[in-house]
Image (cartoon, rainbow, N blue to C red; front, top):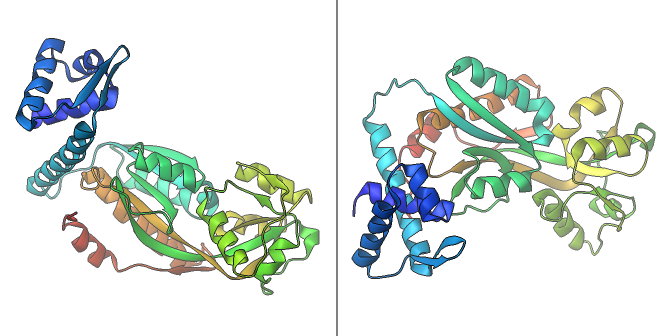
Length: 324
């Protein structure tokens, strides 16, 4: 067994076809088939099930994939550690940003990272947090900002950034006041435009309401922040959201809002374990934390509390690979 065999094994597992994988890794299909056969012989287990559509992993193959990814990740970390410390980040990095952060963080983050590392091709996905979590878990993203309730899964780890209060938001005529919090039970008395039940914000609110014996009124569910805000402005209903998502619209009088007593959400950084030590990804992680700190310190991001260690501590701990 060698690293190339493991890499080719992972390619077959991902593509689901020996023929397709052979084209991607640029070797003849018989040679690739032989590599897989040698791995099966070495481990004494069948790794793939063949069928008319291609191949799928057996249970033994799934176990080998987990170990192979960790082995190759460790090799990648070793190569990074031995490379020039001043290596200039380049290549492609995929970043997931919540729609809620568009006006308080996203634009500032993207523009400053691009200026600092112009040779990096930054691919940005803006979506609801539960969508970003799925993309990160399926390795479609290198880094994403999530809610703190997201689990630490095998494919990514989660580091806390800041904690932010959750607000009830309505049209201007609703008379909600930033200085007058509303009780959690009040959410059961108004028509709330809800997001997916998979979203951590909704789950947090439902658990808090359940402790008071109440629940949301069945009304309307919308998977789109701009549409939700337009409906709220028209007086169709209310919504619940971190303050950052409506900060600009409340300041301009297009919406009104009030904090919900005892309800807050933690924003966190989700990091793809396999890609965490790539120079461009490593710099993006540090850059996100720096921009968050600057936005909070300058007052550009209101009603938020920092919730993490210093940059020096974070970088030091990140260089120590996590054992599992």
